[in-house]
Image (cartoon, rainbow, N blue to C red; front, top):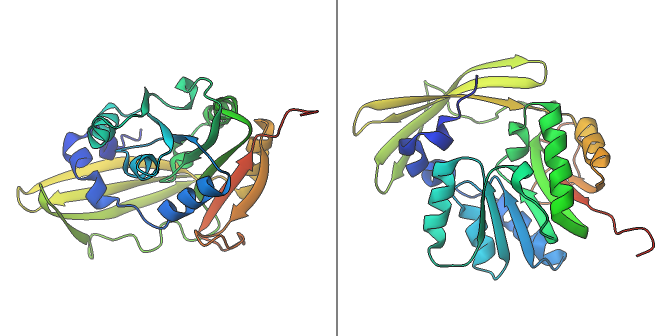
Length: 252
């Protein structure tokens, strides 16, 4: 069973921002929020709150939902006294918020391994955004190379954390079973000699499967991008970035 030590081991939670810094997704989601004139935004799977904070400091009212307690605690520490709503849980804990926008970054959508769980998450997200509101998230293209550029044991990525010092990490033992991929991520702390292995699993749904699941939940797909520069998705695009809307009520 996957353990996702990145979210539960305090040593890895402490260095999460160093290992997984924000990339081009930041500008994409911020730009999207500006385009739809959002005010209230839900960050589902907010993690340590890196991207949540980027929204909050620009004046958005943020709702951060995160099932991993240690990650949520880190997000709260980042915000300090800055106002935000926090939910310890996943989509099923959201409730109704009349949010203008909800998003899932960091490939959160791929952690919903069971189809019933994924469909329930989309239904709860549909209820959490207001009519006319949007949902956006990314998922890796199952027809493209799985993890292009990920480091290996022979060539690990070397980073430096302000507190923990040097860190090395690499992936290992990728195994594909249908649409699911199991893999290990190794983290080594040269300063202490510790090595932590995270046993992870993701699901790679097709564009057609994700589109159908969104429609079944009541969303209408507006765009599927293949990159953060908003180029249309193709059969070989590494990403599938979905932007869907909750339609206005009939007659509105």
